[in-house]
Image 1 (cartoon, helix red, strand yellow):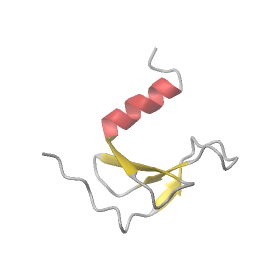
Image 2 (tube, rainbow, N blue to C red; image 1 turned 120 degrees about the vertical axis):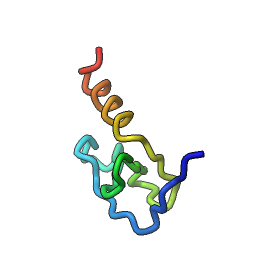
Image 3 (cartoon, rainbow, N blue to C red; image 1 turned 60 degrees about the horizontal axis):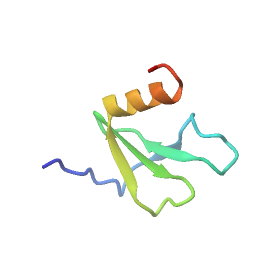
Image 4 (cartoon, one colour; image 1 turned 90 degrees about the vertical axis):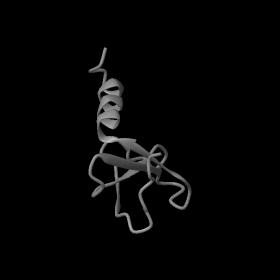
Length: 68
C-alpha cells in the first residue's frame, strides 16, 4: 500500500499552467521527490491529489498537445 505524504507543512505555489484569472488555478508543492501534490487554489483546505512525477509529466505533455 502506498503512503500519502504529510502535506500539512507543504509550501504551495501557483502552477505556471494556471490561467492567472483567479478562476482556473491549481497549486503544486515542491519538495516531495518523485511526487507532485496538487490542489485547487480556491479551496486550499480541501483535498489535494498526489501524482507520481512521471504521471504528472505525461499529463502536462498531453494537455500541451505533445502526446498525440
